Length: 122
Image (cartoon, rainbow, N blue to C red; front, top):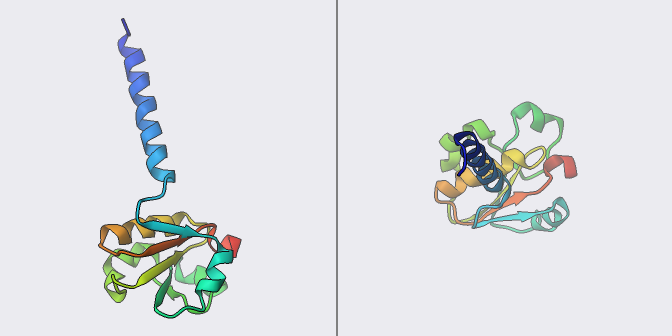
């Protein structure tokens, strides 16, 4: 028979594993591309490009054609984007853009692409 401490340890490990899995596995409906693949996408029409870094980060280094909507403002400014058009999201490393992609998905956006590696890989 398992002791209470052992059961608690097993439950704790299970919670950590579920959290890790949900953090790193891409959400269905969100594509991911490399910065190399992004270069060819920049030439296409009808795509919305957003940079979710802070304005100071964007001033230091930016990609022409990307609109700055910082992650902390995304939920209230999402109405500036069309839910029907594809949205490409970038940040510094890919972490904030991944969070932003999940927010957009929850808000009903249908075509979302996260740029893996972000500006660090650019």
